[in-house]
Length: 495
Image 1: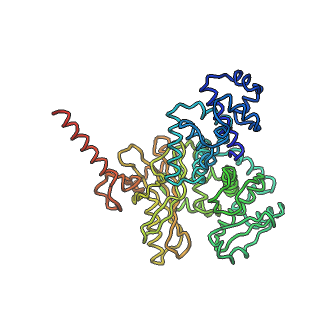
Image 2: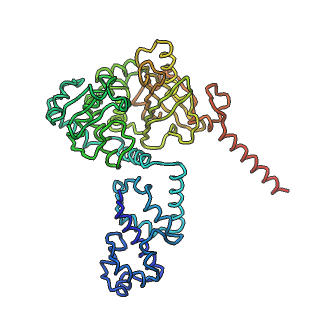
């Protein structure tokens, strides 16, 4: 996070350095001409110091510019995009410090970039403005990259969970009991209120709110026992790990900083690991995935045995499969949709090892309706409309991506967002089918698992006989037009 004062110092230092280099002056020569010390000149150029007015006057005169130019936000055509970047919200949308970059390092990077890189910076600014990319979008992307770099396994949090379970004598308790977690929360002087929040209409979309002032965790009405258990465990994650830069509600769409979003992730990871302890959960997964046949019931029984939601279980798989089974090529998706409105959106995604084919599309295109993620949402909608929905449905599918060699085993669990309402949600884990997966998960060869050719969106798909298509392949059509144009021009060349 770069503060306003840091921005001012960085911009001033950037101008001084650029002007010094244009005049062919060394640090020592500029110091001699201005009467400033060598270290002070260096501190100015690296954004550590901002000189007083009398020194700015001397610098301006020596560098051949006026006072106003040095202290303003205007600059040469070459420098202006970099100054616009430093002075924009865009720069604070990227958690530079988590990637090992200090403001001084940024300044050095920017001031030594060739013209083409400066043009690239300008391009990024234009893209961020044109597509209205928020800083939360960058925080989320940075968090996904952070998870990717660690294979979504955080040993320090796993160790904290083990320490917590030992300290509070929870080793043999599966599933965890809510009363026990509430009593532990009380040791942190935090109480729980399940009544007040449900009476406030403005808060009906929030699941919980933590009041720092009263040290009260408010839980909303309509939550399942598994959801309540997670929220209590999440609050324990904040407290036990001493994460103070944090959100206080559960929506967390407006994080004030990347640290806030990162700490929210750490507390949520702690909660899921607490509910599904690493050693026990790994043994259960080993038992299920080594079965020769696909067994939806085994997965649903696993969810029930730990008293967790399908999404918690799927998220936990993304921690355990890479670490303990060497299955690193995977993705996780959460999708919301409404069958009647033909509306489907991706609300969460995670890719490990590579950027896999199914991904969030910001171009308002139509996701492939052959995805099991969407088909499951449709089935839940049909069951709900016919008053036949009883419990989450779990399905598996082999998805082969059109014009690629990539095949994925996709396991999806879907349920209504709210009972007796048309919107449904599905969570999917996709595992790239390779020799490692076939050896580790024999059931992937079960012929009972259906296989489908799929794509990312209808607009980009060339499967013309697709019965599930909901939009024309406009991108493919445009590509064909371009090919014909190129062929026609080549004919002209041959005349």
